[in-house]
Length: 169
Image (cartoon, rainbow, N blue to C red; front, top):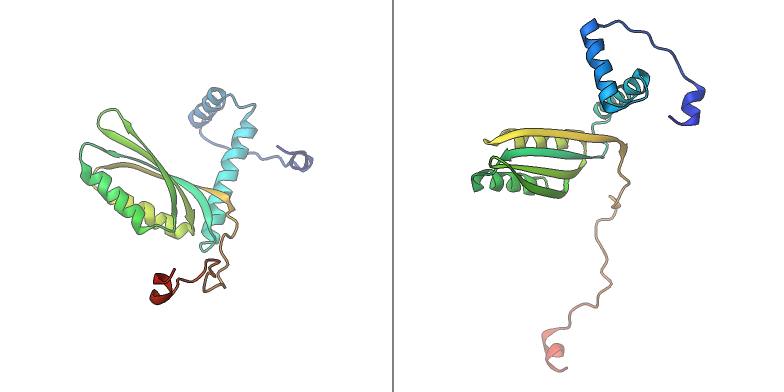
C-alpha cells in the first residue's frame, strides 16, 4: 500500500462461514501474503475494477485472454486463428505453446471496449475443442493511439510518376 492509502485506512468487519475463513487463511498463508487485510484489499480492488468496467462499456481497456484447447487437429487451431482475424482491432498479439496430452495454451494481448472483448471470448467458447477461456482486464485505460478526427493519413512519400515520365529516367 502507498503512504497515502495507509493514511486513510478504514476498518471492515464481516461474518462468513468458518470453513470459508479456514480456506481463506490457508490461501493467505500459501501465497505468503502478510495478512488477511492485504488479501482482502487485492480481492476488493479486483471486484471494484470489474464493476467499473461494466459502468464504462465504451472505454478501451487492455488485458489478456488465456485459451486452452485441443491441438490434436488443425480444425481448432484454424478456428482460433479465424476468430482472431474477426477481431483484428482487438487482438494485439498472441503467444502459443503446445502442452502435454495434445493440448495448446495460447495467450492473447487484447484491447478494446469490454463488450467487444467479451464477444471475442464468447466466440472462442463456441469453438468445439476449447477447454478454457479466461479474460483478465486492467482497470487502467490505454492511451489514445490514433486521432479519431483524422480521416486521412498524409503520406510523406513522393507520388508515383506518370508512366511516360517513369520510362524517361
